[in-house]
Length: 223
Image 1 (spheres, rainbow, N blue to C red):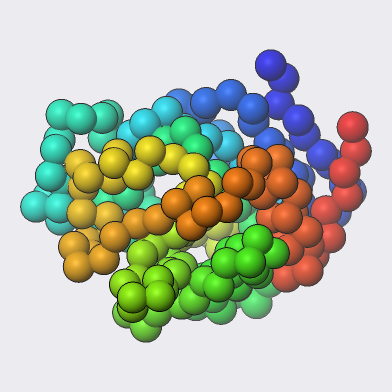
Image 2 (cartoon, one colour; image 1 turned 45 degrees about the vertical axis):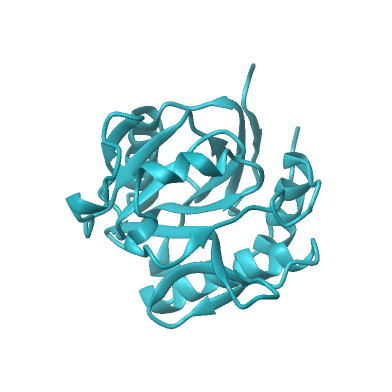
């Protein structure tokens, strides 16, 4: 199938891939696009996709957190953070944005990514929150347990971001068992499906774009 791409002059390109994308192919695209953005040769880009089952290791990854190294392919991600899982049913959004035009404030950028996720999940009646000292977005169960529903890991080159966020829509949560996600063994992971939400990926994508537009600027769709 052909990727759906929405372009707008001066706006971020909104790109959705319907097929599973190999991780090395995604990294190659992001690095090439980030370089072009830095040179002023391409618009910013937000790329929504799913990966086949795999683990990625961020720059702070601890080898002890790789519980089952033979379960899935493992990739060195080059982004911040520790080990994380990607796979079908998880919406990954890679954000290639020019922070030279957005304040050059990395902490504010990460907080805005968190807000993007929280605002998106709120549209599905999920209260998601930040936690001091824990990167990502979390939900609290009635019994007080806290689970991670979305992860964040970014990298910058010449003030252009790449990598981004992932939201657990309906992945196989047992696939997280092969790692200690983000190095936090005392907490678990959850998904929209596990919280009783029968949301389709298309609906999540539409809401992600609506909330992105509010926080980062408009994206106009063109067939």
